[in-house]
Image (cartoon, rainbow, N blue to C red):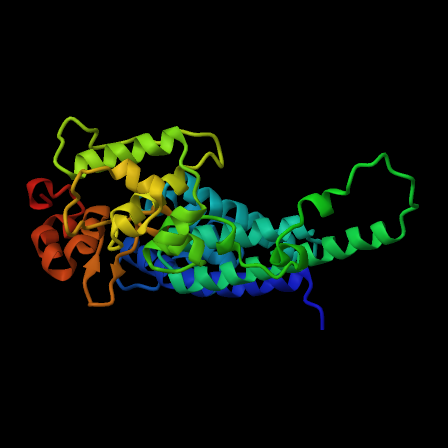
Length: 347
C-alpha cells in the first residue's frame, strides 16, 4: 500500500514528539515555580485564567511541545538559538495545517522532514533525528523514481524528429546506475565531515586512498594542505586557523575532508603522486590527533553521554573527549560542568 505524504508527516510528528519529550520536560520542570511540579498543570491553570476555557495538556503532544518552545522563549532562549527556535515555530504552523487536513506536496513533505531532523539534532536527540533522516531519504528516493518514470514515459511518447547530428546527452554523459534508477544513498553524493569522522558513508569519502584518487587538487586546495603540513610540522609562521570562504557547493567540506585524511593513519606514500608532491620531503609526526566538530551534531541545551559514560556539556568538553577520552575530559571537567571556557585546562 502506497504511503502518502500525509502519512509520512504523521509518522514524523510521532518521532518528533518522542525526541522532544525529555528535552522539553526537563527545561519546563526546571523553570516550574516548585521544581518537580507538573508544568502542564501550571500551563492549564494559566490558560484557563487567561481565556476562561479549561483544557488538558499532555507532555507527549507535539502541539504542546512546539508551543512551549516558541512561547516560553525566556526558558528555551537559554538553550536554543533564535534560528533553532524558528524551526519549532515552522513546525507548529505545519502541525496546524496537518490537523486541518490540508494537502502536502512532495516538496512540502521534504521540507517538513528536514526541519524536524534539524530540530531534533538541536535538542540532542540523535536516535530520533536518524529515524527522520531515513524517512526523508526514502521519500526523496521515491519522489526521484516517480519523476524518472514520468520523464521516461514522456520520452517514449515523444514524436521523433530528425536530429542535426548531435547525440542525446544520455548517450554522451550517462548517469550512474544508482542515480538513473533512483536507488541511491544520499551519503554517496554529499560529503559529510561528521559521518566520515565516524567512519560512515561511501568508500570515496571514507577511504583516504580512494578519496584522493577521486579528488582533483586545485591550487587553493594545494595551498590549504601545504599550510596544514607546515603548521603540523612545527612551522609557527603557518596559519593556525584557516577561514574557508566559498559559495554554496564550493568545496569547504571537501577541503576539510582532505585535511582529515592527510593527517590520518594512512602513510602519505600510499596516497596519490600529487599528494606526495605536496608533502615533499617534510616529515609529518608519527601520530596526529584529529578532532571533527560539526555544529549541527552538537547540542547546546542537553548534555551528551559518550559510549564510555563520559558526560559532555560544551564544545570544549567535546574537543577534550575526542582528543583523549575520559582522561582528557578530567582536565576540563569543572569548566565543562559550569559551561565556561576552560582556558589553560584545555591546553
